[in-house]
Image 1 (cartoon, protein in one colour):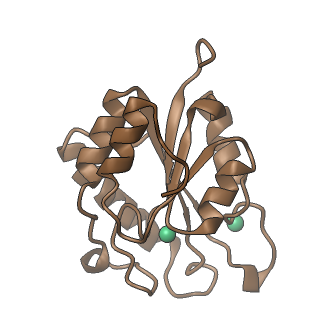
Image 2 (image 1 turned 180 degrees about the horizontal axis):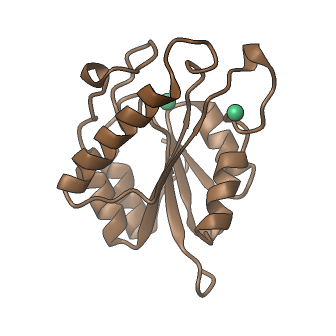
Length: 172
Ligand SMILES: [Mg+2]
Ligand SMILES: [Zn+2]
């Protein structure tokens, strides 16, 4: 890794960090953190990675919920993880939806990841993105970050262990 740079794990939100339910998630009672998340993030942080969440929240543009709903869930997430000793570096979200006009930040667009790379001085070649959709890994791979495609709601501890050992496969 380049001296002075950080390595990061980028994570999608719905289906990776919290339970994908097949519909938009805006209420705290629907926001259920997936098994293995605190443990996996601890393994990664202990291996020297910073943790960044990048999520598409098109439900905002569609009028299903507002920015304040998203912020409220993210406050809950940060608090729950923090109680277990896990700090997120940042959560980025795209509030747009492709049916309401074009934006560059919605994954598979890479703008939000690029923002993070610049702000946190991240070495993309030493970093990974874990997502449950092709658009997640596409956004990462477009800027040289290794994508790991998982099944929705999969326990990611085994991926965290592989990354920690430096032997991660980019397809599971
Ligand atoms: Mg997802
Ligand atoms: Zn956007």
